[in-house]
Image 1 (cartoon, one colour):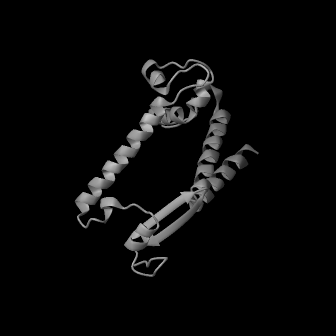
Image 2 (cartoon, helix red, strand yellow):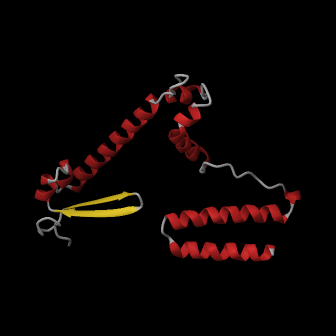
Image 3 (cartoon, one colour):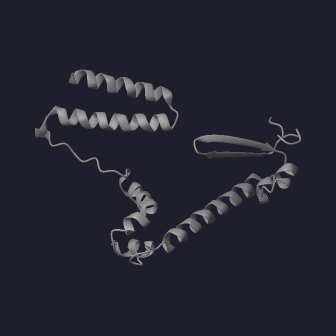
Length: 169
């Protein structure tokens, strides 16, 4: 069991902050958490059902607030709101793509699973194009594995890339 980082009592509040690829953990007792301004509300309630319900309510509320913020987002040039884009399916001007970039990327990922067009390879174009596409996909996966600090998978992907590149030479 971890102890409070401020007073060395048993820690009951554990906070994790991940920002700028740096992870910081803070372990506090209930008194020190209140002293630091950490609002705990009913999470300290010993009944797990009540704590779970409070957590889910807060999560739903924060997602609803985020959705409201997206709906109110408006283009400064043409006045189109994100809500009107979602209902009509049309932007008002090219600048809308810049203004609505984040919610648009989220929407595309929900619809297609990815945010970039990969396309298909016609069967008559041969193995070379298919191999190049495979290399691009592996490099993309390698980059994601390194960003996610999954170095074993990254090493495996690197070896597969080297193998495909050697066949080309």
